[in-house]
Every structure is written in C-alpha cells, then in structure tokens.
Image (cartoon, rainbow, N blue to C red; front, top):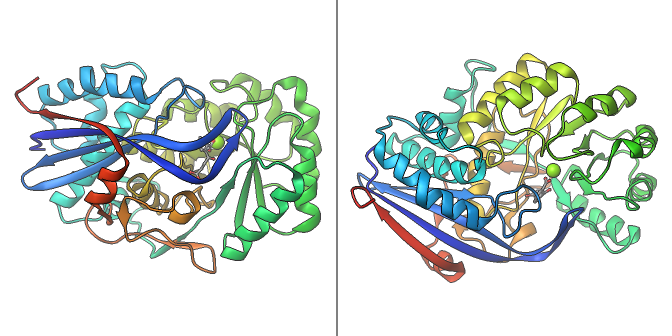
Length: 381
Ligand code: OSB
Ligand code: MG
C-alpha cells in the first residue's frame, strides 16, 4: 500500500439531542478522523474513542498519542500489501483498539478505492461464514434510544422513531430505570422488536431484575455486568431465558470464542473500534456463525465516515439482527458526508455501492467541525 501521507483531525459535532447512558450524557461527539493519501487515492477512517474514558479506557487524547507516537511510525516501518496485514504490525502495541481501528479503517477505504471496489464488496470477499455471499441492496437497521427524563417521554420518543420506520428499538437502562421502562413500552407497543442496553451498570446482585425481564419478550439484554467480564455473565445467562448480548466485554475474536463457548452470551454486538478494526470484526462475524450465534453492528454515534463503513460491515450474512445504524439526522443536523444516510418506511438503509465507503466527504463541512489537525509524511518520522 503506497501511502505517503496521513492526516489526523480532531472533530467535534453537536448531537441533535443529548444522548444519555448509564455512564453519562453526551452532547457533542468528539472523534478523530484519519485520512490517508497515496497514488492519488484518499482513504478515510473514523476513530470512535470519545472525550472521556467512560465506555472504554481509551480517549481521543490517548488515541491521538498512540497513533502519532507508535502506530503511524510502525506503519511507515513495515510495508504492508493489504489492510488485513495491518493488525500484525499494530499488534506490537498492546490494547488501544480504537486507535488501531481508526487507522485500519482509512486503509480499508483507501484499498477498496484503489481496487475500484466498494467496502461492502471487499468485506464480503473477506468473510468466510457463507461463501460466496452477495451484497444486499439494503439492510434492516435499528435505533438506540438514550435515557429520557420520564417513562412517558421515552414512550413518545419511541413512538416517533417507529413512525419514522425503525422496526427495532434499543433502550438504555440503568439501576432504578429499568423494569418500569420496559413495562411502559410493552404496555404501549406489545409487538415491537425491543432490546435493552445496560452498559455494565449492574452486578450479579441484580439478577432478579433481569429474571423479571424474561416475561417481556426482549430480543436481548446487552452488557448487563462489568465491562471486561466473562465469568459473571456465564452465571447470569444460566439464570435467564432472554439472550445476553456482550458489547464492552468483547475485544477480540478470542474473547468472542470464550464467551460463546462458555455461554456468557448468545449474541455479540460487533463494533469495529472496540475490537481493533474491520479485520478482527470480520473474524468475529465468521466465528459466531460457527456457533450459530447471530451478531449485529453496534454504533458509537459516528459521523457519516464511520457509519458508511459500519453499514458495509453490517451487510455481511451473519449480521442477522438489526444494528445501531440510524439515519444521519437522528444524530446530526449537518453531517460531513453526502449523501446522508436515510431510513425508509420499512426501517431499511441502502448499502453504499460506490468505491470504498461510497460516500463523499464534504471538505467545507469537515473544516467546520475540525478542532485541530496534524499531518505525517513517510520518511519524516
Ligand atoms: O453501548 O452501544 C453502546 C453509544 C456510545 C457508546 C456506547 C453505545 C452507544 C450506543 C449508540 O448505543 C449507538 C448508535 O451509534 O446509534
Ligand atoms: Mg452497548
């Protein structure tokens, strides 16, 4: 891969509405955008770390530091032929999966464009769960709804999303704001596809709460217990009819193997950033298929750059459940790519077909949200 220039940009994009989870409230999304250039081709990637170490230990500052001081210099040192080779180079750095994934994503976009393929086509060629697999025109998507001031406000918010076409609703829960929310939603919408996400806010002492959820026919319960845990989730899953889905606990295909074989979960939320990139994400997708375990694509409130690549990933055959991939306007008034992502009346989203991420980065829009930037050139480090 003949890349000569890498640019990092810190961007800040105000959300259309605050997004509250058990670990805090986000009002403005700060992410790092990675741009790689070579042979007249530009690749874009988004690093999904955020301002604070709340969802994971990584922050934008640690990701920038690890990219600048370690990952970019390692990348210049080792010649690689394809994005799948990057994890071997990056493995010298322990952890910092989001930093790794940000650069890998830009390499995937660059490589796909250099080969005149869409990311979805490339991912389909890479996966081994079903072969050969073909890229669908559209995928079914869902929406992740943050904690609201009251159960009534949540019901109204969900009603609006259902009216927009979404056919799968995920709500955030936290201690004292759990069963009553599920009960209120089920009273109003008995048939919808509904799931909950606790973002690690509970312990095994709360098992009764999750046992009580069994009667509400949820698709899954996402990450109820501690963020790196497998063992306690095994104990909880044994007690429940409802499937546990792990998010925060899965950092690699090896974690996924342990969790699925030991029964810590039956479903996995795949976020490329959390697992160090699309290469590892596809490995988890393939492994889960061997266990007959469905996966779905998580989101980190990405801009259109990250969303485009996630939609391509979510088009793979074992993404059997709708992902947290919502319309651009659910997150931002103005995105940095065109065209914006839209959800149709059936709750589906088009998979981009153009080269690479298949959407155009708008330079003016990007400049408008850029807080700082730094350029790195081959031979300079
Ligand atoms: O746990 O899935 C999560 C957003 C930030 C951090 C963690 C999570 C989320 C979401 C939003 O649920 C999903 C989206 O991008 O729509
Ligand atoms: Mg989650």
